[in-house]
Length: 297
Image 1: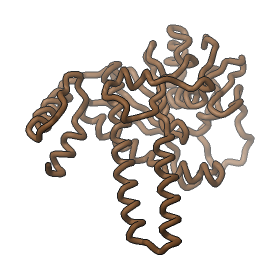
Image 2 (image 1 turned 90 degrees about the horizontal axis):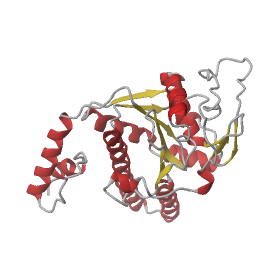
Image 3 (image 1 turned 180 degrees about the vertical axis):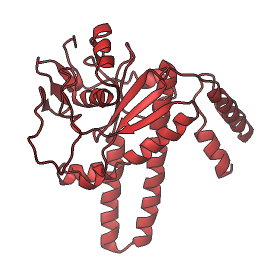
């Protein structure tokens, strides 16, 4: 099978009726049929997913649409891949095996490439499943260069390919007319979405008083609002990215119509190889400490 055919098959959009490709001809037929299907899709551009990029939760998504559970794509597999690579490279370097180091680098690249394709395809499939035509991703300029999370977390964050993930989402989204917006996300992790805290744009040249926020992170993965409401910290950040992009009205309406959606147990994607069915993917379970037990109203 040629590399071009492989790329065509791997990048073919998801379709519920997509057959298991067992021959080159079937792969081409399935991919071509799905590409035709993609051009006929018309999604609601007034509905959006907001994405926060981190380390343990590689990507966290919150929707404007009532009834759509927030979901997390865990970063453990990506972190482990990088940690094993760093360990192997250090050992090979001490022995002077430079050719082996290059081979390990190539292997790491393609494994990351495969996982990012699966993760970005999951995001697009989720948009198709819920008729969402806009994705907003929070990114700060020079975030990789100026990150200060401690030595170990710095290494994990810098080596995680968030930029590649964003680009994969962007080009896959084009096939369906999904708009992708990348915007700055300063203070989104510190501000309380449930309290509608104001979030200025960070400027390192300014020397004035730092903004004060209503809530705070009380433990890893958990944020508490001024009223004592508990919410997953990354979901809080993703909701704040949405507030920066679209204002507060969508969140007020969401909390009024479906008050628990932000504070209920989020869906967690742990294993990107687990299933081809998006509904099964989003029913893989959660961590108890990432769950709030209160209503968001």
